[in-house]
Amino acid sequence: MKNEKELPKTKSKLHPRNKHRHRYDFEELIKSSPELGKFVTPNKFGDDSIDFFNPAAVKALNTALLKHHYIIEYWDIPKGYLCPPIPGRADYLHYIADLLKESNSETSNIPKGNKIKGLDIGVGANCIYPIIGNQEYGWSFIGSDTDEKAVESAEKIVENNSNLKENIEIRFQENFNSFFDGILHPNEFIDFTICNPPFHETAEAAEKASLRKLRNLKGKSSKKPVLNFGGKNNELWYKGGEVRFVKDMIYESRNFDKKCLWFTSLISKEKNLKPTYSILKKVNAKSVKTITMGQGQKISRFVAWTFLSEIEQRNWAKERWQ
Image 1 (cartoon, rainbow, N blue to C red):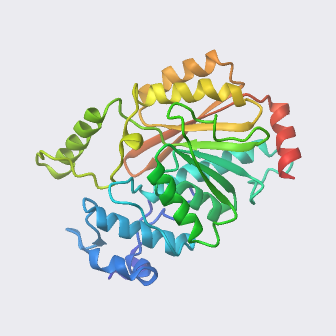
Image 2 (image 1 turned 120 degrees about the vertical axis):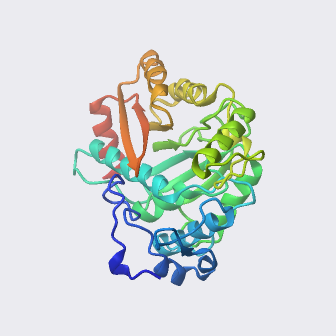
């Protein structure tokens, strides 16, 4: 194993508070989760690594990261469900914290504790966003999903970790075309939403994209896609793709304009920003922000919008967070 002194290569584009800014310390991770050890071997540069095309290895890495950094004793997902890269997921939440800080004009501090509540739209079987948000900032979460098996898996994760039980609630969304209706209770308020929308318009488009990714990364063709991070239909595609998904979310968010401080969603492609801005203008959002994030050579972003004026935002923070 590499000595810890040799590790500090920094993924400099990650958020300054991100615990995953440095190269993975496999020696320490294996101490937290010995199961990871059987997947760790030297790569072509002589550094410890895993085969990121092996779903079992990626799952073992995530388990170790969650145990080591976030004190999660139990974490598992059903076969074939999305196993997301944790560093990027953590980045989204750290930038959400910065966004909330901007609205917290009373103290200019990041609001922490379980009185801060987020809604994860499409929590998935992995429950990653609520786990990280709760363990990093103490926030409480609602996690919603249209997939019953994903809901069962997320609930099991919460129930089997005593530090999550009181702060994360998983709710099943019966209506595939709704985001907030059927999830938020009549007198319920949330401070932010997060969402990782499906990228593709059809299952066929998702499969073709997977094949292209494999050919680009491994330099060879493949007739059957092997997704290293997995993903079920509702996680990968939506009729009309990401643009339609976010458009539908924005239109419905109008009905909850005073129930949420900041609505947000990841936007996978820069070209999808323009139509998103157009819809936000139509619904008269009071403020729109685009936050850019980076990991290595990859650039990602999320769009945030609110229907509250600056005065209303300050009042929100004063009344709910102080």
